[in-house]
Image (tube, rainbow, N blue to C red; front, side):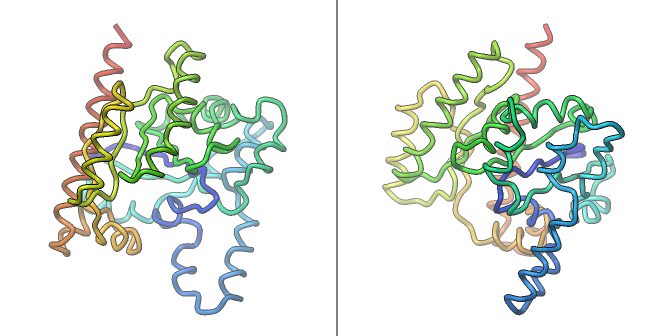
Length: 272
């Protein structure tokens, strides 16, 4: 859509970083032995990433761009996008743990919010997308306290739906504590949906239990999502060579457009 996007990866599994072609993703794909795999992971200790960014952002001479890596997708986007859209990544790795965040000291759960603001990164991009781990930890708290808007993806299964109660409650508390500036839940995204009675029943249950939170357009289960991610291609472009991906690519496109429209509407109203 031609936007400048920064993806902040807060998950120690670093799936966002890998999918976007950083974290030596190509080298990991080619590794054939456990020794090679471990050597690649160990080499990540030498680069600057999220945890270093949070530790060092308030030091003299700090240069935020040294911690950010361009996504491998930018080469593809430059061929299909004439509006100079790009994706940059503030990557994580197995070093992004609760203990590493807690070691940052007082107000450690506000480090990301402070760092994005003080360094000016929040103004350099049209959107900053923060990918958090699914559990409520000091790491995910940093994401919730930094995010103006929150999207909750969930599979339509009993245990998955039960697990989203906690982040919703936490977001509502943050919303109240910040006078509505943080913790605004845009909606719940039904993920990996299939045409089975269980998923239909759970969707109905979610609508009743969380009646004040809208259900966003659903994403049906499709192997194409994983395939596009593995090939590190935008799903919309992957669908041009894979007819089976066209349906789910359209679903993601519709979801994205609705989220952008919602944010634009909220921004316009807040500026009045």
